[in-house]
Amino acid sequence: MAEETVLCESAERLHHEIEACGNREGNKAKFLKQQINSRLTRAHSMGMGYPVSSVGGEFRSEKTKKIKVTAPNKELEVEYLNGLVIGLMAHDKNAPRVVGFQLENALRPLPRISEASTFESSVHVKGEFERTIWGMVEVDDDDDLLTMRDKYLGKLAYDREEKTCYRVLDVNLTSHRAHEYWAVCCVPVVCIEGTWMVEDRHIAGGSSAALQEERKPVYLHEPLEYFALGEVLGADEVRWTTSDLDEMILAFERDEFV
Image (cartoon, rainbow, N blue to C red):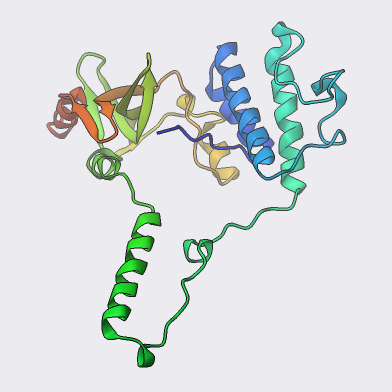
């Protein structure tokens, strides 16, 4: 299962995502390259490109005139990649949008038959065939993902060793050393006037900026904690582990943080 790259649609969002990467230039460069490669791949699949008027010569090869993702100066890599993303983003914002289609419009409907002039058994067979076809193309949500999100999403937990309370932000499939794991992502929270909240120091731009820009908070990467729930061994096989998270949730429910 590939991890989807969520494209930034504004310079403000891009700025906060870069800020969330912390002080590590490598993390910033990796994030920006993902933004660039995803946009280039999408444009290529649609048979479109980026004109020089949007992405200038400083981002192109002198010989082929193709867009270069590799920065000419490693010390200025982040600055180069950031400028390239902004150029791609500006072009995409003004480019014609491709309207998505509904599943029922994606397939050519089978010819309709007249029940008045057709054997009842033939009508039944045709109906079974149509149901089989639609069943094959229907998109199913991952049962494991739905189960884990129902169980953990939004839960509060207490880490006794770190003496820190966390809120579960999401459940995702993540990769580590050529292995894939189901894991939860948690952010530290504190109790302010009876409400458990994320402190501004853990939010890129602060919570007030998020409210003003009407966007979801972008959490800094450094304070986030991940807890593995199970290792993916195959297409339908997961080795579930005894997660520390379950014990941490119980610890919070017992008010051990007091």
